[in-house]
Each structure stands twice: as structure tokens, then as C-alpha cells.
Length: 267
Image 1 (cartoon, helix red, strand yellow):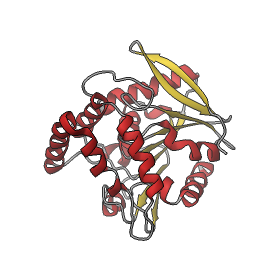
Image 2: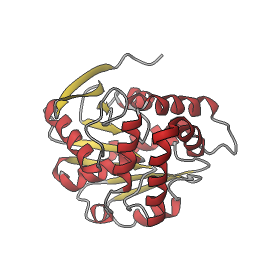
Image 3: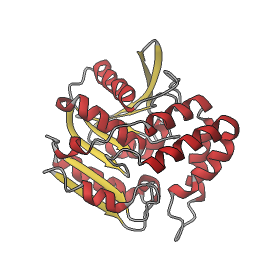
């Protein structure tokens, strides 16, 4: 049984931002990916809260947090995370971002480097979208406006490596989160990801430890990109999870949590 996490809110731009909080100690902030919400981190929160104060936030337009505009830039969402630290009276945090959450974490790291104990990127990368990827995002936005359900049904299964396990339960879990995400929230996030900046320089000059967790069979973020980016920071740990796709904390939770805890305890 999962513990009942403390559900709280704080105000940013006159809107209530939702987050969960569990445990005591140094602050760990968990940032979910596109079409997910804070509950995706429930198992990870339970595990990490034995040693840390763990907060998972619903980024704008996801979960119980409303949209803040027509475009949710990575910088806007980073400002929301910064407001969370102010709300908690915390000076620094270990920041962990999955996929889109990693893009937000990099934007936060660029703006607020002095507020970082460490940075962990989970199946995420510091490069901007290619021209082809930008076109794909624009096409996706058009599809979401009229046929969001079709977009969700097509987008979620490829996140998992189903060669050895069908991951049906986890796929359905993510699909439900995605279907519950509003059309405006979906489009705002797609627009923000499409227009985000390249931030490899943030990795290169990171003054804090960096962890990169890659899925060997990730169809979204090629593992080779993450191998190359792991060579940029002086203090970087690269962990490649074998036979894992884009969702390591659901595909092999125990291994993921072991790698994450080992890194955080070593910081």
C-alpha cells in the first residue's frame, strides 16, 4: 500500500499549483514528463522519502495544476519550481526531471544554478528540437485540437520497450493521465517543448553533480545522445538501463530507485 501523501498547493500568477510532500531532510524535487502528473512519482516518493524530503509537483496544465497560458515555456515552468522552493523556505534542492521534466530542470539550472544540490535527467536531454522534430510537434498540436484521443492512443505505447514485457498496466496508467490532461494543457506543453532552447552549455559548466539515466531501448531519446552529453560535465554519472525504454521508473522500478538513491547519497 502506498502512503497517503500530503497534498498541498501554493499560489503562482493567481493560480493554485498542486504538489505532494513526504519525508524529511534535504529537498528532492521530482518533475514529471509530458502528459503525466505528480502521481507518476508515487513509488519513487515512497522510496526516497526514507532519506529525503520529497516533493512532486504538477507542472502547469497537468494533473491538478491549471494552465497558465497558451504556451508553457520551460522557463515559465522553471519559475514555478523556483516559487515552490520559496514557498517551502528551502534554499536548495536535488532536482530530478523525466523527459519534459528534464527540460524544465535544465531551464531551472540555467536560471538558478546556486539553488541546486544536484541535477538528475531521466530519459531527457539538453538539445533543442531539430527542424524535423519541431515540425512533428506542430503537426501534433493540429491533431490534438481535433482528435486528442487519437494522439494519446498513438503516443503512449512507444514510450515503453515491449519486446520482453507488454507493460499493459503501466501503459493504461499513462494513457489515463494523458486523457485527463486538457487540450489546452497538452498544446501549451507541446508548444513549450518545440520552442525550447539548447542547453548543453548548462551541462558543460554545471557546478554540481549530474546524473543521467538512459534507457537502452528508448525510442524517444536515443541513448547515443545521452552518452555524448554525459561527457560534457566534469562531475557526471551516466547509467544506462538495459532493455528499458523511455519509462525506467515504471519498467524496472527497483533498478531505477537503486541507481537514484546511490547517486543522491553520494552527493
